[in-house]
Image (cartoon, rainbow, N blue to C red; front, side, top):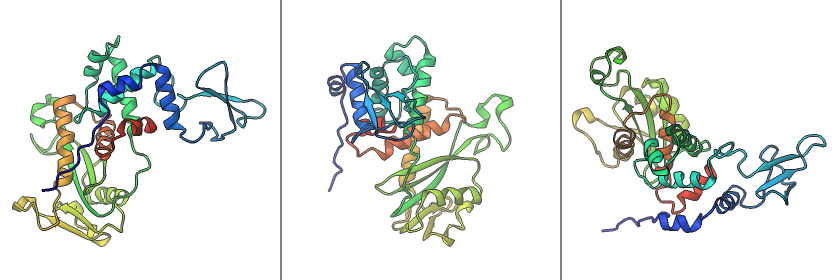
Amino acid sequence: MATSKRIHQMTVPQWEKAFPTDDACMTYLCKHRWPIAVSCPRCGSDHVFALKTMAFKWECMDCGEGVSYRFSVLVGTVFENTNVGLRIWFRVIHTMLTSKKGVSAHQIYRTMGFGSYRTAWHMCHRIRAGLADKNFRKLMGIVEVDETFVGGKAKNRHWDKRGGGGATGGAGKAIVAGAVSRKGSVIARVIGDVRAATLETFVREAVSTDVSLLCTDKWVGYKHLDREFPHQTVDHAAGQYVVGAVHTQTIEGFWSIFKRGVVGTFHKVSAKYLPLYVAEFQFRYNNRLNADIFGEAIRSC
């Protein structure tokens, strides 16, 4: 029986050897941000000159009228305007990427020895924002689409936060829609409701019309997708989970990883910041076969 090849990520000893100082981190960031030539983050011009008296800083001669623009390798990244050393940032990113179910800001705070929890919290959220894929490609091949609810049971909440709709179900919970290409990438987004119009909009944004097969469950919000896509369903309510090539087990596997992270690692995720956590798990999943996931993260940040 064929087995998938294990992808070896950068280990802690390898990380320590690669990034002994902040300058080593600066060099790595510069190489991954500008692999060909340094360009101005403001105007995009490559008519720049390195400042001899200040390392990792350049001067753009095309910005403004007679007034040059000075910038560093940190400008326009999540590392800009921070008092925390770049090596510490790199350490936090490496820790987040090598933890399959994520790592909490409290754990980062305890491990890194920051002066306050808020420092770790802000760093983690800025990194998650940097990992968000803003230029994703629409999915093709066999694609599965599903939605999930995130949040505890209403009966377990404080009386004034329970909302309507009973003790269980989706009442008062956040909703995340996801689409995954088998053996490929996942696209997940927080959505406002599970009405047909909302789900159809998500599918159009995430899935190519040239898809070979679109698989969903029998939820009524998906019933009109066959007008635009080759769409087939499985009926979970009737105990039907796999019909030939039609199933949603791949996207449900992603939901399993995501929810175990939310429950087991973060314990509580507010609706306000839920998109950032979704972006983090999406990035890790989409780079699960990338041996240079750390370098990809640095390019994104």
